[in-house]
Image (cartoon, rainbow, N blue to C red; front, side, top):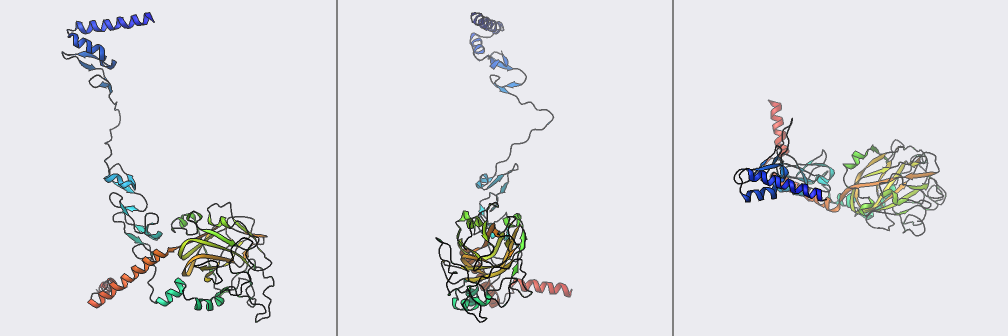
Length: 440
C-alpha cells in the first residue's frame, strides 16, 4: 500500500513539475492537477485549457466523440402534432399514423360509429375527416342503414314485434317441419325445463305461440308420443329453411360486435333436459361445448340465451368444432324482448351443413330481441351425443337503429324540400348527365 501511495505521489509531482516547467502559473498547475483533463488530454495555453486527445472533447475532455464510418447520420425524427393525441403512432417524418377508429392530422377525430366499432363494421373510416365510406348495400352517417322503411305499421310489426295478436296468429303457420319429417306429423312438445332453471314456457304450456301441440289433433296423433329429430334430413324443395354460409375468422373480425359474448354480459339461461355446458356457447374456447343426447323421450333440443342488450338482430353465426359427435342440421330461431314468456316471435328457419367451421345465417326480417331461443329440429350424423361450440349474434343496438331511422327521415325530408323547391335530386342529375352522354 505504501509503495502504491508513493508511486502515485511521485507521478503527481512529476505532472506538477511538467506543468510548472512549461511556464504555467501556480493556479494553472493546481487546476491541471485537480482536473487532469479527465485523463484524456493535457493542459495548454496561458489559461490552462485542456487540449484533448483524439476521440475526446469538452472543457475537461470528458465527452467522447462519436466515430462515424461508412454510414450517414440520420436526422432526428420530427415531432408529431400533439403527440398524435395518444391515439396513434408518430412516424419519422413527423406525421401521425392513427389507430383503428381515429382520424385527423393529430388523430383527435373519432370515427363515426365510435372508436370501438367504426362505421358499425360496415364501412371504412376516412382518415382525413373521420367520416364513413360505407360498403355496398349500406348508407347513413354510421353505415347502419340498409333500406328506408316506407310503411310504419309494417315496420312495427316486423322489426319491433309490437303487433302481438297478428304475430300470434301467424307464428303457428311459420313453424316449419324439421327436414326429413313427414308433413302430416304435428310438431312435438318440448320437455319442461330442468330443475333449478327458469321457466321457458315451452314445456306443458298450451299457450305457446310457436309450439303448437294439442292432444288429439286433426290427424288423431298423440302430442305426448315420442317424436325425435330426424338425422341427416334434407328440406323439401319448397322449404322455408335458409342455408348457412361457411366463414372464417377474418370474416368474423369484420362483422362488428358479438352481442352474445360472455365478456359483454350475455348469459345462457336454460336448455333442454340432460343437456349441459350451455355457457360454453358464449365463450371463445373451441375445446368446450354444449352437449346433449340427440334423441329425447319427448320434444327437441333447445337452448335460451340472453343478449347483452336489446339488439336489432340481423345475423347469427354457429360453430361446431367437436369431432366424434353429431352436429345441428335444421334449426329454428325465436326472439322476445321479455323472459320468461309463453310467446316467442319466429326470426327464421335455417339449415346448417355438416362442417367443423363457423356458419353464417342471415335473417330475412330482422327483429328487435333481448332473448333468443334456438330449437334444433334435426342433426347430422348418427352419434349418440349432439354438440355445439359457439353462438354469435350480430346486429344493431336500439340506439343505432334509432340513428338509422333519424338518418332515413332526414333524407326523406331533404328530398321533399328539393321537390317542393323544384331542385333536382342528385339521382336525377346523374340520370340526366348519363342520358345526355348517351345521346351524344
